[in-house]
Amino acid sequence: STWGCFFLIKMSLYETRAKSHCLELIESWKSFNINDLNVSDLTGGLTNELLIVSLNPSKLENDNNNNISIKPQKVVVRFYGACSGLERETEIQIYTFLSEKNVTAKLLGKFEDGRIEEYLNAHRLHRQDFQNLETLKDVAYQMGLIHSIENVPCSKDITIFESVLSLFEKAKQKKTGEIFMKYRQENGLLIQNWDQLEKEMKQAIQTAENSNSDKVFTHNDFQSGNILRDVNTSKLTIIDFEYASYNPRGFDFGNFFAEMCIDNFAENEHGFHLEEKNYPTNDMQTLFFQTYLSACKPDFIDEKQIQNLIEAMKIEAYVFNRISHLKWCLWAISQNEESKIKWGYIEYAQQRLTTFM
Image (cartoon, rainbow, N blue to C red):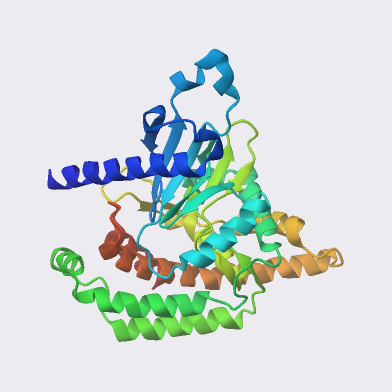
């Protein structure tokens, strides 16, 4: 097919460039050449193209095993995709800062439209993993640690509300686009009334602002594909901080609880599946926030204050859950026309919109 041919050509170009960048930027690889490297596709990116580049095993067995000690032997190369609302310069500053603090995969090199990262021998989590209470606690603890990070080199201004408003205006401009119109012909209007949606959006933002959720450094995309479990140690590592900024902590709460309902890697025609029944129960939320607070709570608060704080955070999660659904709905509308990744963005937008409304 035409799409298949385009995909193969595109991947061949990415593979050649990935090898060249690795040979140029990884000091221990400079004595190798392009034919000494293997490349494979790393699935799971909804914004970026991800490749694994590794030294050919035959090269590691030559020269009386002198090459066995070469580190790294495998890396991840990330090519930035088109994405709404991202400032790549700020992202790389944040990523460098977090990499140096060992919060996420190490940064090994950067080039104009991407970077080279440490390869983690880990597997990403899946939606069903979050129903395991120990895993849920592990995620809560990691979120607490991230929310405790101070002096991150980025603006301290809250970005989430401005981001949603900006995505709304951008999505509104897409409503006459070819793919948007095709969906409209086959399925009816995605958004029936833009004025009504704008009104609902502003009310949701006002409610979220009134929740007085503490401003912290937030990941802003806490979902299964960005949470890796080490194969050997079982330790969790959070990756992909491209949307990270200072925001009300409630957005990470509400966004993660929404993602507990979504399989972003489903093996169906659209590539995702959403089931609202997987939203965490009240008891699961209590456990989540107890563990979260064990990672980041002030030492001076007593048990009664902790209980009050947990109940307040449940409310924060609920109101920001709606903000999350709206943000990713609007994001998907833009991605549908801008991204070269084959995924059901417009159907995803419909599902997130339905849940928001």
